[in-house]
Image 1 (spheres, rainbow, N blue to C red):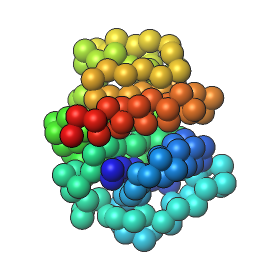
Image 2: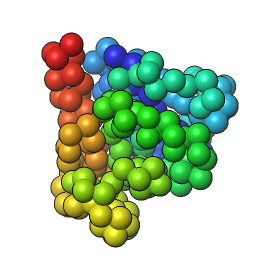
Image 3: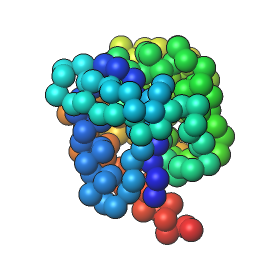
Length: 174
């Protein structure tokens, strides 16, 4: 399956690397979508450097079965750009799997996708989610229909495992 990963400068290095490795090891194709194709994006700890495979202007949600949103400072940059917000909204409207970890749910807030949903996130983001009408639980990974959320780097194995489980269920329904 094709997995979109929206990314901006300052992403949490492990929150990209661990799910990316698990997804590609399982045979999925992860496409890094940035503001511009070919731009270099550096993780906030400087351990990860990736190039955007696709620009947000050329990215079509119809080409992807799932969306990965790593945390760190990246979601704050992404949510300020209406093109990324609309991409997230379209993925959700089409019922695609949306997986967000740590600060990743910040863009879900901006996209208006959290009211009535059960989810988790980084501790400070949990407060924002509650205020926006989400039912917040403090667990390593939470699944609510097409939405998978997780809290922090310590939860990445559970987060990655749940994404793979959801993708397997999706493949079985095809």
